[in-house]
Image (spheres, rainbow, N blue to C red):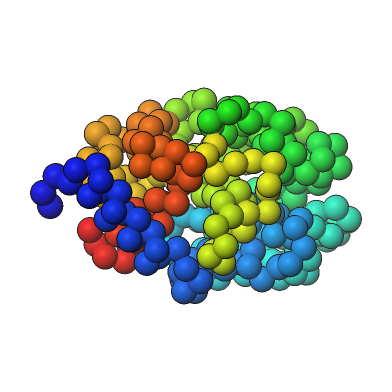
Length: 257
């Protein structure tokens, strides 16, 4: 592909955003899980748990996230707040890749801690947000998530941008919660945060497409690469840079760009 001017690149990507940022996208995407719920807390908890296991085969992610919601009696907020030790035991058989039943139980306990002691998920991210980035906020979220007694092995399931992680799954989750463009895909239920603070969920697909389009030079998909991609996406749209996740993902996964 010939090198595009900034205007041509923006026009090309804006067209792809329109193509993929619509409710049809939900049918094959893990975001369908939180779309089953109406209550804010149910959406944000189901979304967080789904995003946590969102690696590997997409069908497997969706199937396992559905199984997990059933184990939570399809009332994730009520389960998180009011579970008994006996309730937790039924989570033991759950497994998705390296995320097992012990991790799952730890996540429920940590989520309960966040809702009972820290005012909920949105509050934790908002309290530690900076003007143009939530990366420090993610790191602080991880600290709070694991400030209760926990299994050391479970820490690996929450990324830390301050340790040079691209934190793909949490950045995807934040996109779901914060972006609000009325297309019916992202929820926009966290109105204390702004889309301008978001970072693009960077993975092998979006990274490869970004490199081909000249938006990214760094070879690894790590925190430094994310900072570079963020900077370049903000040149295209500073108010809503992460809408381009739809374009990069769609080009990579659906078009083999």
